[in-house]
Image 1 (cartoon, rainbow, N blue to C red):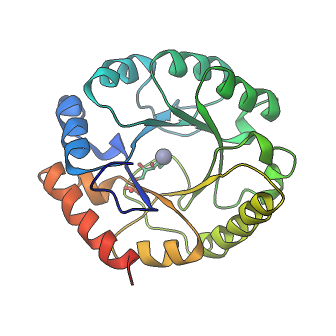
Image 2 (image 1 turned 120 degrees about the vertical axis):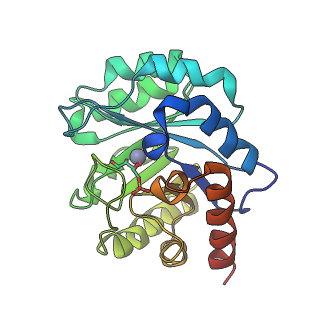
Length: 233
Ligand code: DX5
Ligand code: ZN
């Protein structure tokens, strides 16, 4: 976690809302401003109706920043890209379980490549996908919008779901299990981050809230200060 981070909370700016013509500069700027992770949204025009960036862009960004690259795969199938993104320098890799033929195998593959592994659940995806793989998870990512686009509004049913996942994580810890981050992604703004934290999230993806600002570093700092204030209440 960086020196300027929120403490027990992590902010992961999503490059989806960045200026892709100046991606290196923008990612460096948010790291300098104190971002804990950089969130890298991979869309394939198959699992989701949008097309973004692949491992070559991840490899190009890797030497520019020290912070972990958090790759969110919105692709189907997943295994080949897990290997390619690990080689490209990803540190965390998450995927949507319904996009994998063998969820357990895909999770093992991520860790075998030296990365931290996670599942992503869409707003209407049930929690029972977690039932038999808790030991294999370093992170659970709950979507608070339907995936595919930045700049959407948060879906309110995410809030009780965060609490349910937090309870599962705490029960897993109490039984001797490993720590698991609880990340939330989509529609996160200054005015809802506090409620998401109270519900049990510890890692917040923010795309348009950071990169929608004219200057991403200023945008990040503004969001960060507001997040700090909200999270300390
Ligand atoms: C949506 C992506 C999100 C998105 C978040 O499919 O997974 O990471 O970029 O963007 P905002 O913060 O604008 O909702
Ligand atoms: Zn994402």
